[in-house]
Image (cartoon, rainbow, N blue to C red; front, side, top):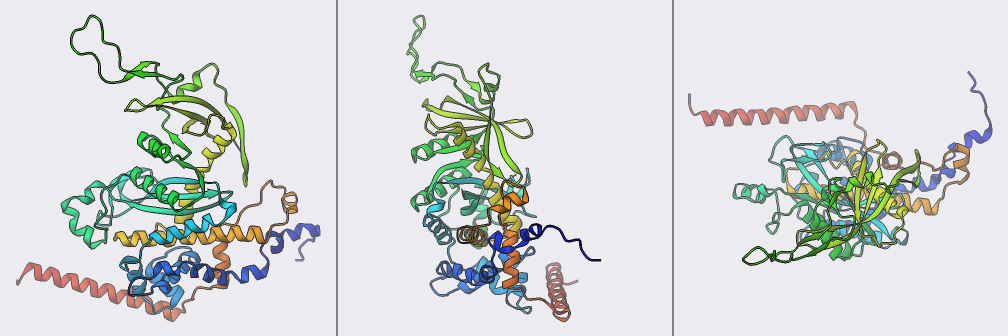
Length: 492
């Protein structure tokens, strides 16, 4: 059957050039990745070995494989079908290269891009379930992504966002306090947990990473976080001490003052004997819960148009008011309280120490940019395999995370360069009747990479040989366990 021919203009929306994807650019994607890697390969050299080639293999696996990115599968698909991945496992789990220079290099490269200056530093943590507590940092704790308390590992990560470009720029594995007791001393040594590492809360880890980013010249203008961090007064005080602007979510029950409270030492009561009060107290003013502001007669929500997104105009009803808080040491602090009606009808609240003349639009836009912390985690896990490595060793977790962050930065930089060098045809928006054209995703970049850097395909004979080898290895393991059980039982 001959397809019906429609208006010619309807078909040219499929022209790759109009989408900023000329054939020559896609064909050069392989060389682009090699050039990108050359800037980072120094990060993977140790005092005795240059392991950078294994790092490139691992990065290729993360970027070109859609799932099951374990050591053996990456080695078979990227190197050759006979490779069992032992070298890759040693590179990720045991090699002493440091992950810190990888993150420093990512931050430095962002700082060298003027179009990325003035972005938001996003802070969040994410947990993954583990089948037992023998992986570094594994314990029964709250796993944010799972939304429950269970045995798992939790990573705290910094993201960076500016104009639809996001990347992971630092990360640390949270180690619960129990991991520093004497019972875990052997595991700490076996899993390469640094001897200088001491217990740090998630907030302390976050502040350490923020200070590193600041010292490294990462050009962020504001810090954003969810309410886990926003509810900690010491976190906000530390950001203020660093002279950093923030917009952080807070629990709706947080107490605030609508007028500046008076703090001081009360006068002694004339009818009471003995020494008078010595500690400062709030002498005037009564605190209210942050969400209680919606009941005030003068409370008015305003519709704020945040940005045009792929799904249409992103709009929230918001209100902002100057309020005061009093810390445990009786320090009075003036802040913005931002209230936003969510799309489900509920309200959320946030604090900001932005100047008093900051427009509501700016506060609302900053608040919405925290969403890209979730996008960073989503890409890292769903598209780059951050959660696919079940890492027992601390070194494996930090190495895998650094390479995962490198994969995200490669995609972000590719999108940024292609947008500048090969702009899309602006008439596409009108022709397709949309306000914003969809951006390239990690999955899109993977599809093009697979074409120019194809994964090795297994023949039926090679696949069968791998399965048989796996079965033989399992049999050897079972035999070893049976012999060990027999020895422990003694002669019969």
